[in-house]
Image (cartoon, rainbow, N blue to C red; front, side, top):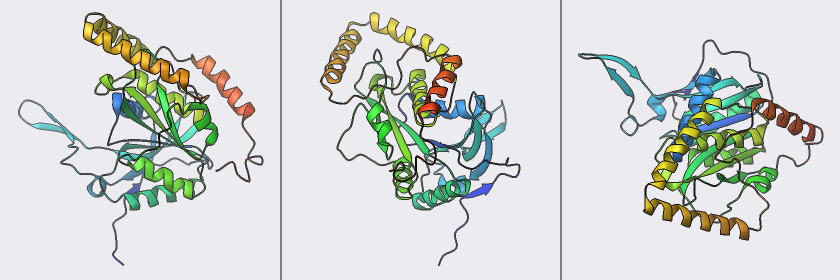
Length: 310
């Protein structure tokens, strides 16, 4: 058998990891409408002080020509080289609850090996659930809540939050492969695809990242404040509104999208509701109260045996 170089290295100063934590997966790649996942990664790494456990090897997984590293040129010389990062980290939410985060770029190569390594790490740490997020452009208005398509093995989340349930074939992502592998390993897994207004797909749309955080909260009970994102979202929506009001064609397009969205939701047979409104999220206190409600209604580990994984 051929000998392969390992895909990752253990972080030298990795902290101890409690068993049974949820795993959150945020990988950029084929599509990231509204830069939802990119912004999510920044929030998780910078605002929540992620501590690396395993660092994956760019020279094996990354096509540098497709996603070139950033360099800083200072007048007459290169002063900084910033490669892409793909890491498994230990993170704590706004209430100090720990969770695992696999975040960074979607691998360009050796998907099957990567999936096997991720599942092995998840088994090593005894992860309790897996939640991953993706964002795609859709013909929906920014004046309505951001909807999601929920896949995976957690039917409670699908029933509660999947507003669009297509039967189709689409180009796959590494998130889809990981979902399939975790499902076959009998690990509870849920994927949230955020349905982002197509005309905002190339922007940094803060509401999309707020919706990603809300999706993770719904799946895990983790709490995120998102104060900076909410402030940025208010400013962003104000600029969008000003542009719409000044352009008759944009106004007609928006009204048409609103009519189609409202008609679809009115005729939908599902009881699911969109994840988050494009306005403010609840405050930290309200989120803490929601967490208490979530924990109070969550089955105990004993109750969860015998089928809750499916």
